[in-house]
Amino acid sequence: MSDPLAGLDEQQRAAASLLRGPVCVLAGAGTGKTRVITHRIAHGVDTGAYSPARVMAVTFTAKAAGEMRGRLRALGVEGVAARTFHATALAQLNFFWPQLAGDSAPSIVDKKVRVLGQAADSLRLHLDAATLRDVASRIEWRKVAMRTIEQDAAAHPTGLGGLDAGAVADIMRAYEKVKDERRQLDFEDVLLACAGMLESEPRVAAAVHEQYRHLTVDEYQDVSPVQQRLLELWLGERRDLCVVGDASQTIYSFAGADPRYLLEFAGAYPDAHVVRLEHNYRSDAAILGVANALMRGRPGALVLSSDRPAGPAPIVSAYADDAAEAAGVAAAVADQVAAGTRPDEIAILYRANAQSAPLLSALAARGIPASVLGGTRFFDMPEVRQAVMALRGASVAPVETTFVAAVRDVLRSLGLTDDPPPAGGALRDAWEARAAVLRLAEEAPDGTTLRGFTDGLIARGRDQHEPAMRTVTLATLHAAKGLEWPHVHLVGLSEGLLPISYATSLEQIAEERRLAYVGITRAARTLSLSWSERSGARPRQRSRFLEEIGTGTLRVSAARATPSAPRPR
Image (cartoon, rainbow, N blue to C red; front, side):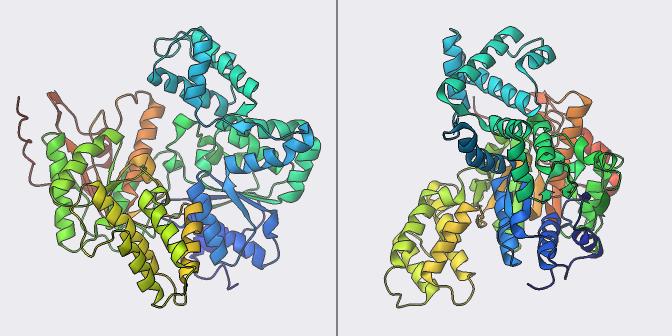
């Protein structure tokens, strides 16, 4: 292993050198937090301070955990338990439950709404799917907040939708009864059951404390009360804990995330080492100026800086209506592509999924390929699954051509042509998927075999390490977190869209502001912001967030877009 601290900047090196906790790393957007986490662990292993099997690194998504494992492998570190909170808790339940109960652990509910519907039927309540989803969300929030059914009813005396508080409580009890009868746990029960096991079984807690000596938590601003409790139980009386997060990127409060744990970490651990990562390696200085202006003076806000010279100030454009905004953004994207920008270097971000439809239509009208993030995962696409199976079959026979040529031949037999079909349809999506597989082959290291390449594809699928499609990415702000693009168009900066209409409290508005911040900090080289003055016949006001940013860091588009053509009656 080469020196894991080599190549880190001064702030990153300071964080990675602190091998004993408590440590708090306040890591701003684009400052290299995953690099710090993995290099810190590698440094601990390299110096003998850590044994890989004694390290637990938890994060919030399977994709982030897979990326962490991949980076550790690249640093020569194998055996670290890098998983999500839920995967870690489930692994411990499955291991210890048979020892404690003498049988296998309960199964996991895969369709909560269906079980809820059956629970409601048992009470002679016939609820529509939307109401059942709302109740499911309430159950999830109740459990991550560690509240009883009675406490939840007291906190929500008006009930939910057309149901009074008593009816909601009755459905929750019936739901728990159905699960108990079937020996099932839901997603949130996994955390609660693991915490209960550690609290009530000292020998289980002792075994976990013996196994895992060093704990690291990524995205610590997103922990919920039940995750914080579980973390405390994993830690026990020890203090070897490193947390990494950014309060300005807390965007999951609706799921129980509480940035208070990050903001108050130094108070909970007065001897904690606190390191601030504020040198941004992603974004142009002009983009960082917008981000800093939006969050100035907010709790936990970091001031991001960059060595890159500031380019043109990000531009803000006003459009007459939503259709005109979609057309204007598509025109701007077309200009970027015509100037040599690849489509996959461009993202269009928005607050709500419904905003994607006019954007997709406007892009297709200009022949620009686009895909919506959060749809079918790349390795679950039928075309990709078919390609992996065909490549695996071809790898059994001797390869008489070069490795890349063999991959190309297989993909051509499945329908990959030299020229792509027109944008905006299933044929183009299939072509883009097969072309992405071919690019992976072309980028593979020298000496790669067809079998090794296929095994690598399967491993990438397990880790959700998806390749970039050569399409413009459309994504909600929630889905875009953790990603980046050279060019970003952030649309819908109107009151009612961002902030969303149902955000009325100060806490909800603060969350919407952080969503805007996440969108802004996804951009590396150029950023455009836009809003529309009308939705149908209803006028709109520009977002208060544009006012907060101010005109000092933004360029106002000189040309105001014209209204879209009226629809035929």
